[in-house]
Image (cartoon, rainbow, N blue to C red):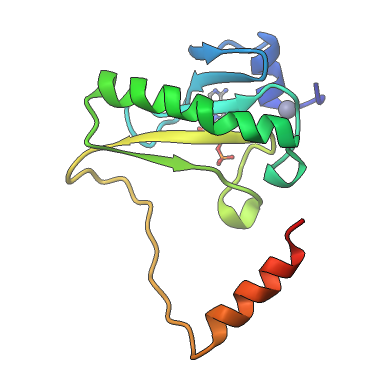
Length: 138
Ligand code: AMP
Ligand code: ZN
C-alpha cells in the first residue's frame, strides 16, 4: 500500500466504493465520475503506478477479469458497445497513478468522446518504427 494513494485506500476499505468484483489480485469498482452510467474501473490490488511497473503475472490475469466484467456490464446496462481503456502517464490522461483499467459502456449516438484524428505514415516509416519497437521487446 502506497501512502496518499486513493486507490490503495479504496482497496484497503479505508475509502468507500461501490464494489463490482473482487479477487486476490483485483478490485473492480464504479468510477465516481463516470464517462457513462455503468463505467467500471478495475484496480490492481498491489500498488504500481502504470503498465510499465505491473507484475507480469498480474498483467496476464487482467484481461480474463476484464472479459468477465465486460460481459456483465454489457448485459446489465444493455450497452451497444464497450470501450476498454487504460491510461499511462499524464500525457495519456492518467490522473490516478495506481494501475487501473476502464470499462466504459457505449450506446449508439452517445456523446462519449474517445477518438483521434488518423495520421498518415510516409513510405517506409511504419516498417522502420515497427522494427525499432520490435528490437526493444524482451
Ligand atoms: P485515470 O484518469 O485513467 O487515471 O482514471 C482515474 C479515474 O478514477 C477517473 O475516471 C476518476 O473518476 C476515478 N476516481 C477518482 N477517485 C475515485 C474514487 N474515490 N472512487 C471511484 N473512482 C474514482
Ligand atoms: Zn495505490
